[in-house]
Amino acid sequence: MLTYEDPTAWGPEPVRPRWQLTLRFIATVVCFPVLCVVGLATFVFFIALAFLTEVIAMFSSSYERGFGEVMDSALERVIRLGSWFVTWPQLRHEGDTEYYRAKVDKVVADWTARASVLPEPNKPKPPVECEIALSVYRGVGARYVAEVALAQGWELRPTDVRKEVRLWWAAASRVDRVNTA
View 1: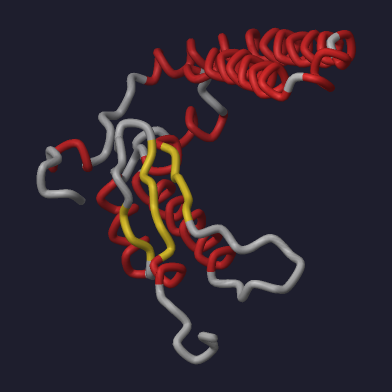
View 2: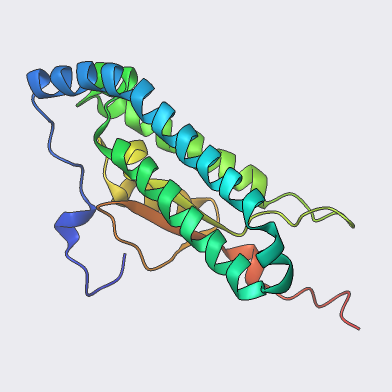
């Protein structure tokens, strides 16, 4: 935690009323298929447009780059529409501290296992950064995520704890002094 940040923001989120979660869950069940159809339609639209404008993209790298940015932005907005969705586990375990502790422990352990793998030649390097979403730690707070992650060798990155906790694998910044050429 950085010293200039408000320490109360790193605590658990307040427990939401059960009736509100139930209504949001019902709305999620109704709206999720619609959001999937809208997302798929947006993707198909951009693929069709890409096929139609392939000739322009062959001669203009800026057009291709701009087209990719517009497509990413549109799909990101469609995905962001579902940010208010409530899943079944969220509905069942709202306020259950032990459930969220186990969830944080599992997610951080998974990221640690991925990051601690030795890099293999001609394979992608292991991830050195990760983001843990608010939905993972909502019942225990970002402080618990930081404690668990620091104990496993992660460093905190600048973070907005109302959305996510960003971590950096500390071992990735160490220099291998044995094999330096």
